[in-house]
Amino acid sequence: MGISIRATDARVNLVNRVNKMARPSHKPTPETRRIVETLSGYGVPHEQIGVLVGDGIDHETLVKHYRNDLSRGKAKANAKVGQSLFQKAVSGDTAAMIWWSKSQMRWKGTDIVETPDMQIKNITVKFV
Image (cartoon, rainbow, N blue to C red):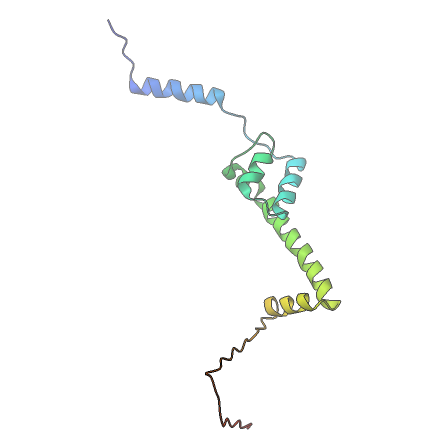
């Protein structure tokens, strides 16, 4: 005599076993929010930030609970770097001034390359 197990019974038993073993749902704390914001500002990838939060959380949980903290950390870091760059530019740092003018003011540099076979003769320029 064999034991008969219906597929639905097996699924229910498996689900019950998994639910008993499942981790408790993640609850953000002020400390984990600070960690996420700081690491995001440092440019640490989301997957690595998740590993460092509590006992580790997956990317989906990180984004679900910390979306604003991730955005805020990056925005604060960009603002700080922008502030430093701006201070360098206004204090006369030529490289910072050039970078600022190209990236923020949309100025473009132009390179002229001359080769020996390019000979231009008799150019007339009229200003109207």
